[in-house]
Length: 269
Image (cartoon, rainbow, N blue to C red; front, top):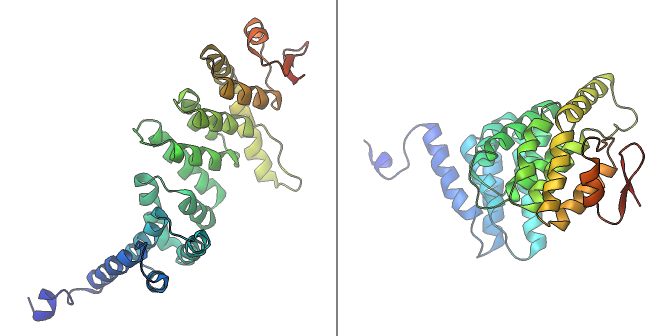
């Protein structure tokens, strides 16, 4: 081993890049000191366009600094650099999603780097893992469900259903939003392919989502959980679902601002 290797300056290009990314990564997550130091490190990492550099950039999303406007500006810049790096960013982002809870910005980057169907596949996979893993916070599940609720896919409902029984109110409501979101009409101008996917997603929601959603509402009522009950009543009222087979229970459980029509459909009073 030569002198430069002993001092940490030698090695392959990959080893040198890794050391540089690690050194700059420490500056990126430094909350205090001149912001120019952190911002300079961000630019250097962005220019490298390697997986270790993207790993280091992603770490910027795990801290918040004051003032808030500087924090937002830096995170926007990190987002731009990650997206500009292209495909090299994909694996670091996937690793980050699996390991961290601060996923708002990484999800946005992933949405820009992937096709809609690829993005949906990542979301469903992350939710499938989250359904079986312990988590200290519900934030990650809510963020994944909210992201999925904006897309139509047959896999969306199976990915969301386990979270209708979550301990957290926000997670249960977000899961219901995914199910009902599959039934919403597409905006005008949707392509034939988008219409076909939406039709398949709607069929999956009607076949697999109706009963779990009705039972989730009744469970919230039995638990005295007015917040979830009210939210699910509104979602059901805006959906094509009826409550046939559950009519007496719903008549007793609906909030005062809702009623059932002659076809067993929830209406706002």
